[in-house]
Figure: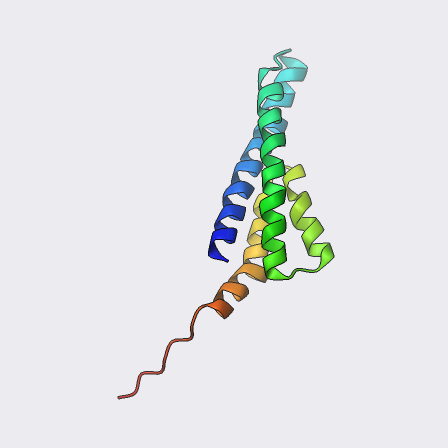
Length: 112
C-alpha cells in the first residue's frame, strides 16, 4: 500500500507542477509572446505523464476500495491547475491515512 501511495503522490506532484507551468507560463507566452516552445513541449510531457498518473491513481483507488464518485474526482484532478494538490491532500486525510493506520500493527501494551 505504501508503494502505491508513494507512486500516486509523486505523479500528482509532477502532473500538478507541469499543468501549472503550461497554463500560467506556456499559454500566456504562446498568446502574447508568440513563443510556443513551453506550450508545445511541456504540454506534451504533461499529457504523457498524466496517463501515468491515471494508472497510478486508479491502482491506489482500487487498493483503497473507493466508490466511483471519489475515484472520478481523483482521476480528473490532473486536468485542472492546482487541483492535484487539493485532491492529494483530501485523499491523504480521507482515505490514505485511515488505510495506512489500519494496516500498521497496533502497538502492544507495555506492562510494568
